[in-house]
Amino acid sequence: MADGRARVAASILDADFGNLGYAVKRAERAGADRIHIDVMDGHFVPNLTFGPRTIKALRRRTELPLDAHLMISEPGRFIDEYLDAGCDSVTFHVEIDEAIQPTMEAIRAAGRAAGLAVKPATPLSALEPYRDLLDIVLVMTVEPGFGGQTFMKDVAQQKLLPARELLSQKAFGGEVHVDGGINRETAELVGGLGVDILVVGSALWIKGHDMGREIRLVRALADEGYQYQLNDGQPPIPRDRWSTFTSLPKHLAKRLMDEIEAGGIPVIMLRGDGQTNPDGVRDYDLLVPMTVEALTRERHEADRERYLRQAEAWRGEYVRDHGAAASTER
Ligand code: DX5
Ligand code: ZN
Image (cartoon, rainbow, N blue to C red):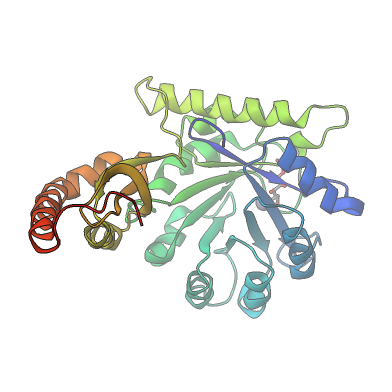
């Protein structure tokens, strides 16, 4: 897993269409964090690419998450096929002429991340009505349709920070994506505007260029921008690193996990290597994403202490009722 905060999604729009399976593998080996798949219908945009069957075939070729970017007029009509194809997130355009909410609900009901994209001329306010359903805001910094166009700096400067605001109801997991003209020249600027996912297309597929180096440069420069613009010079916290919040006997760990998750913070519960309880079972560790460690403490420090006291009481009772520990772990 990459260090730092920014993540790169490799767009395969400019890859060799004769060998997309290889392109995806190549991007994975070069260290891309995601694959970004640009679906175009020749109607919403003046270009035609691939559909759900291609995505389904690519799904088998890589372990990386697949982000679908649907530049199509009727996502609602085809959404089940894209979900069935195995996309981890589906982002479509807010400029379409059909109802948006049902499609977003279908994406979320399938347990995938739901995104809305805005063309350069569309104001972010168009996304306001869907705030509660948004996992991803994708800001286009070129006109959708083709790779290799020039980055629109003014659009990035106008929209990227406010896009984060649109996701403020999510304690964790909301993502701002920037798509169009991202490369080593533009990464630092968008990183400094707090973007989470940089979609990189044509810059990865230049003949003779080292794809891995481009990905590493884009990520590092984006983090540098973030660190100096938004994070007071502090190195950013990696998006996907977890830290142990507390350790408790299993039944109590489960209860605290549910309480934390109710507030939108994901928790991983793992059998830890801490103390062994009188019933012979070790404490379980509760892990939360490092980026929301402080928020978790702010919300749940008192709960944590209460549960630790309960754990002590439970251990005492257990010993009274059943005698001392079976020393081996079950
Ligand atoms: C354009 C697509 C982009 C495209 C970006 O409509 O949405 O994902 O692949 O390509 P570059 O990085 O070349 O602008
Ligand atoms: Zn795209």
